[in-house]
Image (tube, rainbow, N blue to C red; front, side, top):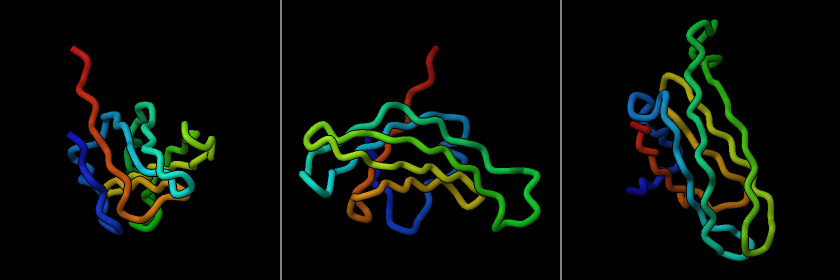
Length: 103
């Protein structure tokens, strides 16, 4: 099930920590729907000196299959939740899907 990320609202950390997710979004240049490989959700930094410094980042790149534009993806995890920042897409157009754990 795809879950739409709300702009400026992080996804719940307790549902995503230690899991992997796939992202989908529409390319701004050609409007092709782009799907990522699975991306791991980093844990917040428990040894951070402040709440402003508690974020951990995972960076990825994905090419649009329609126009070959490279989109930069940053997954930020902190104690407020998880946010998915994708370059060159409309705010609110990113959706995520949690991968099922392997049994």
